[in-house]
Image (cartoon, rainbow, N blue to C red):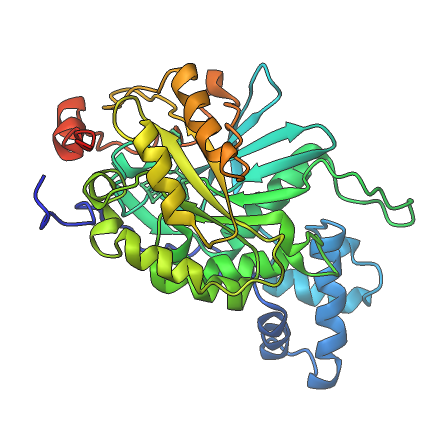
Length: 398
Ligand code: SAH
Ligand code: SF4
């Protein structure tokens, strides 16, 4: 692979098809947009703020999809809403449950495209891994999603809709009047499914604002983590406009190797990325940046790599999350041995950083990190093509 090879694959960018029927979907609108939409459809200006607040709570706090259930609104007004609007979330096409309790959903969005959503239950909490795009325009050579040729940005409705869908499935909408249950099955969100969230910034931001709204799903900003491959211009905006936690798909300690594993490195190299992270505004020191590091046998897993990684993160409040590589059909890499991963983790840990090794979840249903790729995608690449594009990186010679 030459340094001038394109960063983006030859993808087909799909236009977003509007749902039929002409009714406006209220899901995914910001509070302001919701109010304006109601006004545009005849709600008197003076009432709009209060009405939109009531509707907001019905949708996001109580999980209602039917205007008839919105009992604090006049009957005639409910009928009016029904005529003009829908409350619509992606449709679940299939649902698989792993032996470890992990749930993988395939959901269909407008235009018939499909994305995957994964729910990972843990003791006293649960994490939902959501997608931000159908496919991904980036081509990280170890990632299954990166081999998918069709790409479309999800709308804010389709992003927050994944969270609403999971709450439906977990049966976790509160009952009005019932005592508030503080332990949540769905307590955390990670933007680590399909797609590069910072290439769909506005929709991701609007959806996460809805997830954090105190009169709705009410997740704290500290329970939302956005993972990026290193889209530098979007990183400061994440702090300023979303305020959630940040994870960086770092994966390599030299530009030569990172250029191949995470090709956006050719646009924003390691030095530039690290400078951006050093400047990253944080509210407190407890908000560390997670460096995700996939362990690939013989490619990025040497002791030298671990030491170089430590040098890179010096001065950044960081933790390192080691991800054993999850294989997928045709993948051009192997997972590092457990001993190698432990030795690597130990070097990081000895230097005073947390270095957890991510437990692989839902592997039996192909729900683990980097295995996601919807089956709707027809233009499959061959193993040979994937290998040729990956270039099979050589480990650094140091
Ligand atoms: N596009 C974003 C978020 C989605 S990928 C990003 O790249 O950060 C979520 C995480 O899964 C990333 O850290 C990614 O590098 C990792 N990942 C991708 N493929 C993987 C695989 N086959 N095995 C293990 N982790 C993988
Ligand atoms: Fe896209 Fe992230 Fe996969 Fe890279 S790792 S191809 S950025 S989804």
